[in-house]
Length: 228
Image 1 (cartoon, rainbow, N blue to C red):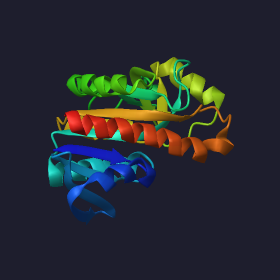
Image 2 (image 1 turned 180 degrees about the vertical axis):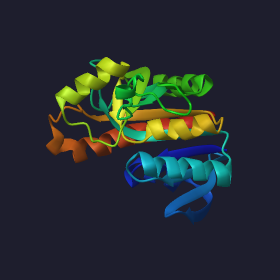
Image 3 (image 1 turned 30 degrees about the vertical axis):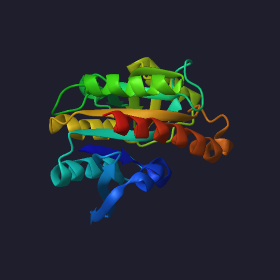
Image 4 (image 1 turned 90 degrees about the vertical axis):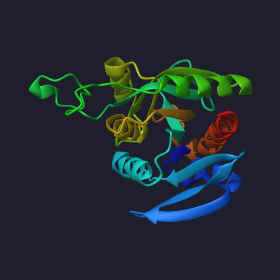
């Protein structure tokens, strides 16, 4: 079974429309939609925005559905000069850029308890998603995706995240989902389409770009499911 989590309905809706033999259950206020897409077992969920909602959703999905892999899909702000609106970021690792116990002597981003900064995504899943992206002809980059409970709209914050982590994109859920998957020994990956520049420029057009970016990510996820 493939588990797919998005923060917003627009990031999951088109995939939900493809579900056959759909069943729905709600846990902790989150609806989990399971069924088949292209003959493959899939469970979808819209977790809500932010790391806590994302973690609750991922843990519940693992406990209730035990998917073979979890993909976090949706949109992100670019932190790379190689990625523009509509382009694709694929995580080979995730970080939580707002995790900071450095006053205690720790590296910025260190996750206490598991004692790492960058959580590695599943290499095989990264390769499969990359293949699907290549088939679409979309411009893409593979690298670290940074998560935090903050909509990135400041060039100073953007610069700090890139300096600390070398991240290529920033969003609000992938790092938490990766954290949950890591402690559960569950393969995961994050796929994000670029919706904004993460520096505040063009923020007034975010909703317009959001729709276009989400469509790009959905198209790739549908292809991934078909070929998985």
